[in-house]
Length: 152
Figure 1 (tube, rainbow, N blue to C red):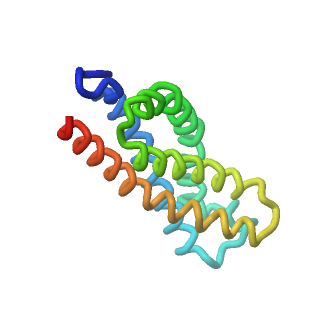
Figure 2: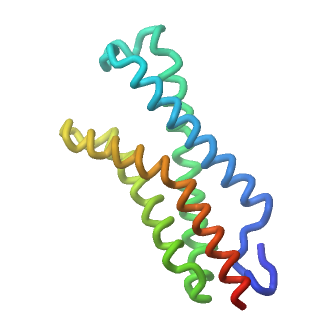
């Protein structure tokens, strides 16, 4: 996990697992978004029909990735974030990534449990915007790490 300049650096296997989880979540989320938009005529009852199978399938995949991503977020919060904070490395970009991941968790839960249609719609759009923006935020965090190491 570490080298002398970057003791909080994530190992290649860790990055591969995180990349697979986040990539799978992004792709499945985009497929859900596309499927729901392509099938606007389907109401909640119609989502149970055979015609809605692709949408249900990708919703299931997206939902099954959630506990794994929450575990990864918790692990990073305990193992990666404190070291970087202590080293005063990438605090701004790291804080933005942590906030984005927290928003994704809260907005995802809100999609299922909010109750009020206006709040569900707010959660839906928050989840979509933050989810699509997360790769950019992660890339920014990675670039900030490279710049931080170069400055040493």
